[in-house]
Image (cartoon, rainbow, N blue to C red; front, side, top):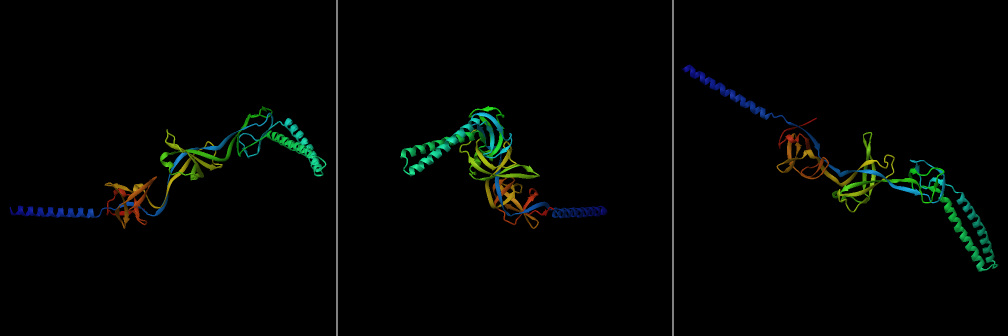
Length: 346
């Protein structure tokens, strides 16, 4: 009996020792929780633009139909369709036999009347002719000068010149074809500059102003954006009732990378923010109706309440709660709590 009692006491002592060892192991494991791996970004003041992108199609500044100002058969055509042409450069010529004859006749008459006027003027100065004779000679000379100028203008009209610098889109008649006065003979694309029409939502029109510079995104060349500069020179007063957008015209200079008909994207700035704190939106966490972030304090996560402002893409402006120099945790923050141990990832 005494032996059984001693055996029972020994078992109880061993059980108590075993339990104590297990408790101590659990406590040690709890005290050795692995730190959370995080990434941090140092907070700095920066500038950021809030912009939006709208598509548009490049158009020529103007599409011009050139008529003939005289009648006759076409005797010469200069450049072919698709050719670049300067303002004042000849497009085509019309037969000028009759116009040349009229011009020659008017020139001879002008020279005769000029000589007679000079003779009468000299005689009048010597008081050898009357005032009436002098006035008659002067009138005849003035009329012949007008007639000559009209004949010269008609002759010059036989050479049809480009009214703009641009591209010849079409030459309508062929050599030898008879054209009448007023008939369309050529179509030109005015390329002195180009225009792009875009539709801007009503809520964003208030940020626009005439003369505002914008970026025109043409394409990517070698991995880089091919950006051209444009200027807003027209904003419609009334919005389209169907789309609730305003028509806006962006003018761009002539450029070899931009041709009429090309689809481009236009970046328009709503607002520019200077010297503000900007954070990745995913670094900000919603907690109990508050916006919080975590910063690194010597290997310990410190929870901060923040007030946020405008969101720009994947970024958000921090109005208060962060200071330049803070190490903002930008990865792993979803696994943290205030005071948690952290380890900076490589």
